[in-house]
Length: 271
Image (tube, rainbow, N blue to C red; front, side, top):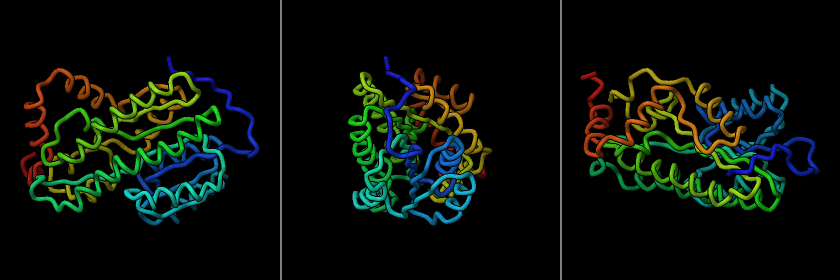
């Protein structure tokens, strides 16, 4: 059973520190807001401008530090880690990620590789570096943003869904490895969320890109509370919970065809 001791060891800093990636907007920004309201100082990172996020977070009384970098690269992650200046990290929100629409054979492989390096390589490198510090300190909470996309073969989002299948599985495995420590690992698995994800992934001509989506504040609250409670995982939204359950008993070929109807270019016109 995962250890969930709610008493961190004594610290030299007066406030705990949370690191949040993908924090310029969407789920990541909402996670940062929740952490600030609960007394954390913040180190936020993204590959987009962070000035507006910094301003809003500071209004909540948090000390905020930001790093703009590409977390698909080890250099980008190292730049973020250096900004902690050796300060203990109490909570890590490994949220950076992006998608890629259209058929796999039509995608530029540079874009394919960037999705893999952001969603997988950069994420697990960050988790390993921060997680080692947490284990040594005897305390820490890690929330990794996975996706219910990991339950489905993602026709016309094949690389993205595959990357999230990896992350979902990885989070469960890491949690088990740390079960005898006071470092908890939780994976948040959202469904379609009202963020810039779909524009950046060029999915606005698809059914999934144009359908109504869950507000990012709701998704972040679900994940944050699950992390605080020491849960292993949480699916955000009852419709997504149902979809996750059904995915476990539906043949992969059927799931792939269902995903095709949602994500095939031009499917917005048929919805």
